[in-house]
Length: 114
Image (cartoon, rainbow, N blue to C red; front, side, top):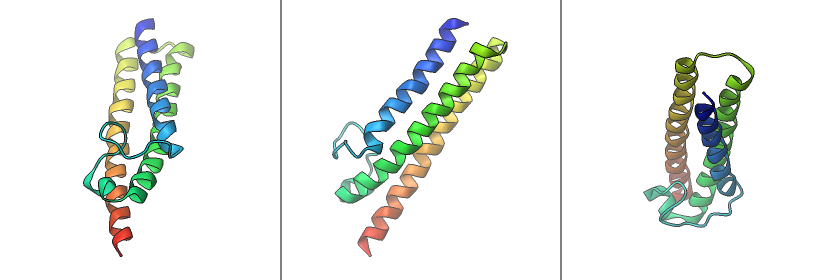
């Protein structure tokens, strides 16, 4: 079981660490890292605003993932339930964060054009 605990703890830590530079507005527009959409490519201010918010969301998701992953260290959870709960949390969380990020970026672009 320890390998799953380490894997999901690592995933939570990675998501958190990837969100921090975005949240701090330290990532300039680029083709590799961040929320790369037509809306964020069209405006540097939209890039920074959308990625800052998404970075905050990824930090929150990473912390939630860390808490769920750490639950197995203090509770006796059967392995299939533990793995399933972690997979649902990280996959569903990533889908939600990405969907919200796309909608936010498009809204910010529309607002910047007014």
